[in-house]
Image (cartoon, rainbow, N blue to C red; front, side, top):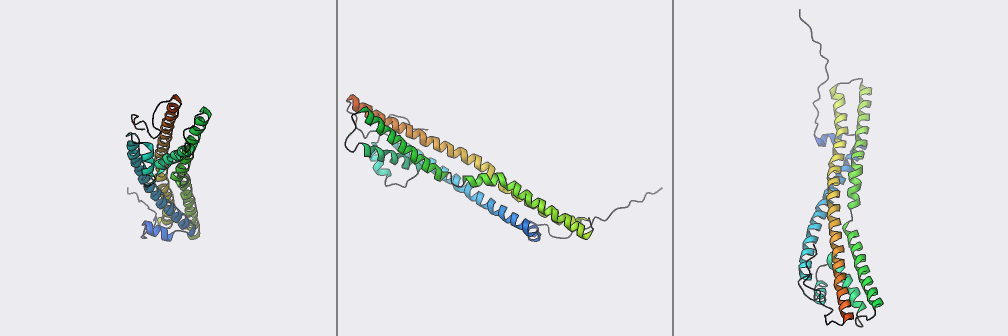
Length: 258
């Protein structure tokens, strides 16, 4: 006994399913979502490349400066040289401290302990303000990465929901549930989600990596500030004790700040 197998015609779709075709055939709302996510992804990668390159360059410059700083070369000589160099956050932090130090000892080292303590506090405050200003500049655009990481999937999801709504509308209008009717709208909707993930995943990873790198660099600046303050405190203590230690020495026997 033979059994007849009846198959329904699900339709045949001959259209172009490339990314460009999906974009061109999408609804205007879905197109806006796709354009926004594409621009966000491009800008995200531009920030990633710029920040990674900048952090590497700053750390290399910091290594060279610390080698010079701990070589035993007088601070005044280093200060005069770096004032003519291309500045970076560590050099600006150093010059901020030296500017305040020089302003405080222009009439000679203070003899009273209260004046010495005030001078140390002013130097530390000047360097801390410089660090805060430099880190604010370095952290620029990090908020954009965080925003893309958190919102891009939901923006893509909005495009997906809108595309699916259009697909159901097309099905209702044609009274046809064949693949040729359903596939294009669903593909356009899912393409919006894919673009959201393409933008969000690199932004999430980059934000975590770059934030860690920026925090390490900020800690490096803070450690340098502490060491610099300690050197100036030794100068003031030696002056109070009557030791003949020149005020432009940086105690070259110290190790480089890691």
